[in-house]
Every structure is written in structure tokens, then in C-alpha cells.
Length: 291
Ligand SMILES: NC(=O)c1ccc[n+]([C@@H]2O[C@H](COP(=O)([O-])OP(=O)(O)OC[C@H]3O[C@@H](n4cnc5c(N)ncnc54)[C@H](OP(=O)(O)O)[C@@H]3O)[C@@H](O)[C@H]2O)c1
Image (cartoon, rainbow, N blue to C red):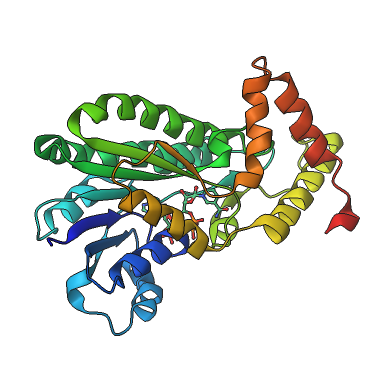
């Protein structure tokens, strides 16, 4: 059977790296994986993970999703001339009091998470439409379904991705192209280390003491969540595989069903009040002793 050509963004670490390794290691060589990353100096980690593999299942390409030229160059390097499965995974976080977030930081988040995802889809979509065949998988976030304090712009970017994907999914079913969001809760990756965080160590006058205390509680909550509920990338990869192998993939997949009851409050009380109350209680009653 002909190999499925898969292109994945953000393969220097985390979910993208694990997915690339897993697909490229398929014993039947069912996939040809184009693992892309914005900085090829970081390819060593991926190369070490796939040691001993045949070159016919993996190629590594430079691709910065904030740079259209870089996306087009990567596209032109695909020897098969097509992508059957596009995985839009690259993303960055931004955390801290909103009043401390610079215009530059906010633009960067939107440029990577929202516009970068859209740019990537835009580039590969015409060919999928012509073939009347394709899969688009997007790494979503519970932060794209529910607001989180101190993550306003990150959540805005991920909510926007939800809207873009849902809109596309309606249209693309007429082209036999399946769009799926893989909604992740906390995952053990470099995400927290890599996220842009506002520095509160100084005595910034822009942030009042109440906000500072609430931010401390949020950070504690975040720490507890990652310690108690974070999944490994292998668990996330299993969900991606389910989508890739399904004859008729669904639109949304949740990697961690424990996080669903909170989200569902948005639909049981459509005015939003229940969700906001429950989330506030959950986060801001965190005790330091919980950790
Ligand atoms: N980890 C979590 O708890 C979690 C939860 C929900 C959703 N997610 C989502 O999962 C996805 C993958 O994140 P991760 O957890 O695997 O974190 P990660 O280890 O930090 O991986 C993020 C990847 O995105 C890449 N990237 C950032 N900006 C890019 C750009 N302009 N062009 C191309 N690649 C770029 C990073 O490359 P560099 O190494 O060059 O920075 C890295 O390869 C993200 O979309 C994230 O929002 C993660």
C-alpha cells in the first residue's frame, strides 16, 4: 500500500516530536513523515529518538509557521508532491497578568497559535481539495474551550483556532477532508518551560497586590494540575493515532476526560455563570499544602 505522507509542525520537542517518532517507527512503514521545526539546530533530539530507522520513513524540514516563505519552501521539498495528513501542532503559551503583557508578546502568540495554524492549512489545502482527500489534525487545548485566568491571550488564540477549524470542518466535508481537533489538558512537555511568562519579581506598579496574590494561587494550581493530572506524550500520540486510523474521524477528541465536566458547565448554564464560579473556586481556593 502507498505510504501516507504526514507533515507535522513543531517537532523539536513535546507532542510533535513524539508523534513524528511514533509514525516514522511504524513497523509496516505505513507513513512517510515530514517532521518540521523552525530551528534545525534542535533536530538532534528527534534524530536520537529515531536512531536506526530507515530514511524512507522520516525527513526533517525547516518550517517556521510565522513565515510564509519558510512554509512554501518546506512544501516544495516534499518529494511525493503531496501531504495526505497535515498535523498543525506548533504552539506557544503566554501567562501572567494581562496588564503586563506587551503588544509584541501578544502579537507573537496570535501569530504562532492562530495565524501560523491558518497559514499552514491555507498552504496545503488547495492540493487536498483538488485530490478530494485529506486529513487535518490540530493540537487543541482545553484552554481553547474554557477560559483560564492569567492565560487570556493564549486562550483567545486557542478559542480562535476552534472557530477556524469548526468553520472549515463544515465546508471541507464536501471535499472528503476531515478536520479534527485533539483537545489536550496538561501534558508533560517543554511547554511550561517554553511559554512566555511575565516577570513579577520586580515591584511593578502596574500590578496590584490582590492580582499578585491571585497569580500566586493560579501558579500553585497550575503546578498541582501538572503534577497530578499531566499526561505523557505517548498518551496523546495514541489519540492522534486513533484519529489517523479512523475511517471517519470525528471533529473533537479529548485526551483527558477528567477535564470535561467543567467544560460542560458552559452548556448546562449557557449564561456562563456556573463555569466562571466553578473555575474560580477550583483555582483560587488552592491551598499551598495541596502540592
Ligand atoms: N503541554 C501542554 O500542557 C499542552 C496542553 C494543551 C495544548 N498544548 C498544545 O500542544 C502543542 C504542542 O506543544 P507541546 O506541549 O508539545 O510543547 P513544546 O514541547 O513547547 O512544543 C512546541 C513546539 O512548537 C514549536 N514552535 C513554536 N513556535 C513555532 C513557530 N513559529 N514555527 C514552528 N514551530 C514553532 C516549538 O519549537 P521551538 O523548539 O523552536 O520553540 C516546539 O517544537 C501546542 O500547540 C500547545 O498549545 C500543550
